[in-house]
Image 1 (tube, rainbow, N blue to C red):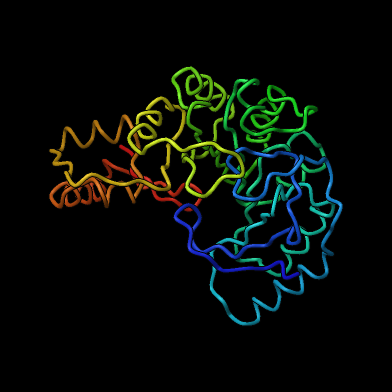
Image 2: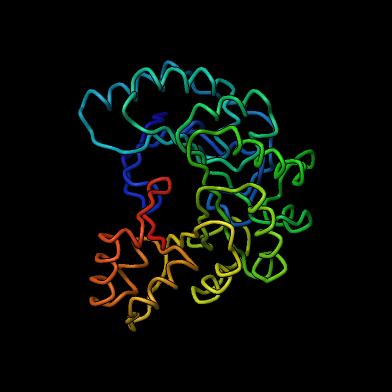
Length: 300
């Protein structure tokens, strides 16, 4: 089966050319209740494996066509870090996509394997998931293999960040009545403060899930996001209210000091005079623009 797809346009990572490291079926050490793939018992290893040569051949053919993209993204019908030839693949991709960024969308368990830990250090951007920092909730949502230790995984994620030269993005997916409360988010904020990621992506269910679970509404998601104070938070999908923010200089600086705003948030929530004021403050170096793994943020 074909492994290369796209490029697709992503709010989180720009134009992304995907590599599916499990194109024929779901192969994952999680069986998340919110996953859009079919429910399937978690597994420790892949039993259907794509050859590195096939992947490299498909990527090279895409490159030869001159197709434009920003990120070459390692993903899978399941967990891409289960791919047994991950290190060889990353080294080979480096040889043919030298001016593109390499990204993996992982559930984070790779940090528990020292070889995979080292392999991921060679990437430009790594996205890990962390749906709960409380073990009971973690297993209820992610239905992970029982030998996966949440506390150790968080510790190893923090260690990974200290050694990683690229951008580490953490993702939280919120499920109604499971991790949608203050206790969960206080625990998450404490864990994420230890990990110290570049940015945090927060979302809820937006595709039909494999189990009978539900999303939360946008307003509650936004309120929960305020409990994450250790890094900039990006809400990938939001339904913005009609009312726009009309801020003076003092209000705008205070607002951006307390909470960095993404470019998408500014476009949808600031009125025109606030946007003009923002540009003036940028020119005066009172507000800085920070690119966090492909998403632009404004910070005072």
